[in-house]
Length: 289
Figure 1 (cartoon, rainbow, N blue to C red):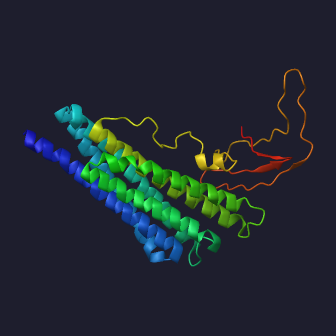
Figure 2 (tube, one colour; figure 1 turned 45 degrees about the vertical axis):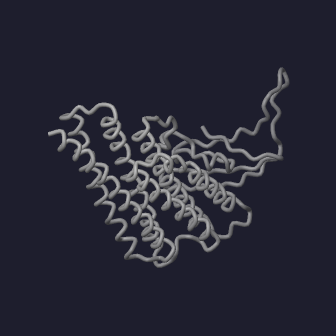
Figure 3 (tube, rainbow, N blue to C red; figure 1 turned 120 degrees about the vertical axis):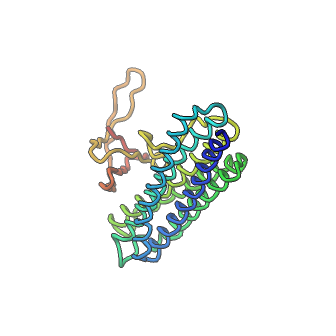
């Protein structure tokens, strides 16, 4: 009976590794569809998301069954808890790959990525895909050491994302608002894929060593770190954007208004996100309520 139980546990991990390989294929296919304007490949990636979701639902059900019938403890309980979290992360990564493919499909027969951003997007895609591969391998081998190195790749993705916004907010951006929206969303999708891969690596560490990572990249209610570093904040599209054209007070001195304000705004009201930038005298800021 216990042999069957342990086989069930191991089969969950095996199928999670298989799911990570499916996600890797989706990320790779979505990137090729995007950069080569390959409509058939984009459709394949979008269709593959349903298969990833089916596996997610099956694994989730099996994990709940193990919890209910076997009451696992210690390392076995860690395996089930980590599996549930990894299952959710992998499903979300599949959806993000499908989002990339949908942008490729939407812009077909044109290419969605402007020529000047191809190197940036290509590198983001490659790093994200490598992180998916590393996460799956770390899980298969129960390798906490390799999983612990994933944070370095995540920082590389964040820097690539910041460089995107520096390009898009430059005064000589030549590609227009539509291209800026596409690139902003694509950058966000690849960044989130990398974040979910980092989550999985943290769960591998938890599974192997029992160490709990305290800062998961769940994106819920958290500002986009890359936007913050680029001098921006990200808010829901329905939020009111306000600019406070005042200087802070010092002691009893009154607030002094900034007299010369030259706003430069890029708004992308897509997927529930709004971007805004403003230039004031000797400063760059944006305030959102």
